[in-house]
Image (tube, rainbow over all chains, first blue to last red):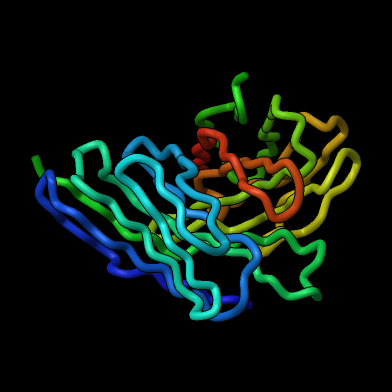
Length: 114
Length: 112
């Protein structure tokens, strides 16, 4: 099955700093999502971005499907940005029609220090 | 519009006991999913449903059963709980295949 690798595994930053989180995947995808899991365990959908670039406030994401990676940018970090960021993908092969498995990476744990 | 809700939020079981986790969504989504999350890992798909009356196996289906009798509800059953099923269980739904999945708040299950 498809492999998803996220880097870095851990990131500690001062409030106000910018960060870039990376997601590499091993095969073509037709679904890629970024999630934020807050310290209370809630999974919050950030972006649905199988290709292209999207922005939402201080967050933006870019997926280059042909090169099999996606990047999540966080600017002017706030303490509320702390938590684990997951990338999740679904393989894009025709043979996968009906297989709805979303494969998650192991996440990047982000800690923002006041 | 509550989105995706899960019941219960937390449960402790003894080995061999059974229980059912309920997931409900009010977004009229066709697809629903059950995942488990274990420490230091991402989520793994247990079972999913592509519509009322349908179910399909995911990545880690053993020891679980599911039912989708109504479009808005997706039930996850543990017939004989084992300590290896201690985990946090997340339900999700999407409008159709390949679209954004929206997650519930999770159910924390401890099997002793």
